[in-house]
Image 1 (cartoon, protein in one colour):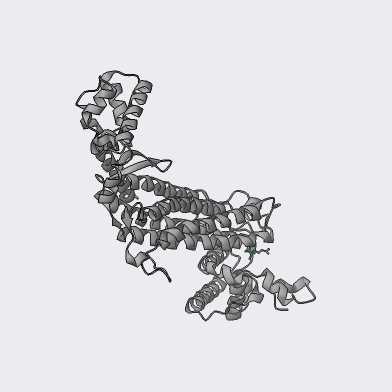
Image 2 (cartoon, protein in one colour):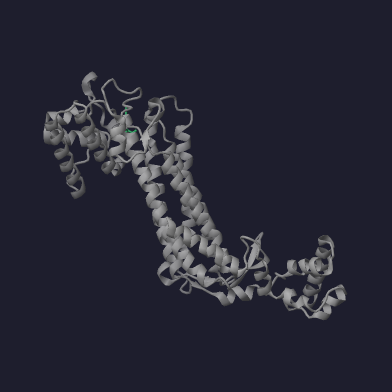
Length: 460
Ligand code: ARG
């Protein structure tokens, strides 16, 4: 009967219940936030005259000692203590005696866990932003080298128009920049302090919520305590933000997998980030992007899991909420290693520019340019120009020649309004560089976009 809440109970808890009820084996990850939260709370209680300065000094020493024990690994995490809050408080009281028993004045585990988890998630938002920036830096380095490397731009996975590889990577830079902004805005929105809400309704003690909020780095105090103790939007947001980021990573991964195949041959992943086969000696497999693609599913699972835990929960705190942590921890760890390994894979991969350019010679990538030429130079309405170009493509298929390489005489046969200067328009590099509209693929526009991302990364 050594439970902190054992007063109203006459029989001890079954060990099965201890096992089922406990979160201490995973919520101990929050120990840093928990101790900082307690230090802030104790300082505030002392300032308000609720603790003496001597009691405060003992609590500070005791908590520092607990922190050392946790960091050195000697701290005893017991399942019977249920969660880290009670495990730490129990150890504190064992170390310092009665002063330790006063720490929980004007506080509940409900606001305590809300503080700890919220601050942990906000810290992780920042760390993920930094990791995303490191990934973007590497992508920028590769993109910079390839603003003139042609590759087939695709729609429906069919050759569409020639673009350059730097531009293609710029699409992913755009996605990762949005991811950064999402993490940042979530951190900003959720940076309100739950401390002082106590169990659900606030406390009659004369607490200074503003003081603990400031000590803990929150921007302000939460408005309504009933909401605050059961609000897990911040956890859902990081799960959604990681899910969206992993969705982006999975799209790039899918391309890396395809590009590594013989059929594409656009990139070769380095040996350090490829794996072999246990039976086929010749194999070099793109396991890294495949696993990244796969891990996306696991993160989505955590998002759906917590959304479902929260669905229909009556106010305020319910024990269901304890199920909020493992999925978030797992998603964050998955995101951290995914960002790191993707960065390294990109940094060390070989870009086979020659094969990218070779692939552009198939599929009449400059067909749209012929149609545009007919509109611009010959005054032909676009629909008709589209049809004429279709006939030129059919001719190319018949004689097995790509439009970009077709002899002028065939084009003239198709429509006599076409002049010799069309040849320049059909060249693939010309086609890429013709797309100078804002955000377009032309090398100058691509360079402008990369400058924008560099500026974003530097400006942060
Ligand atoms: N371990 C609990 C959690 O993670 C802490 C809050 C428990 N509060 C309570 N009244 N049972 O949610």
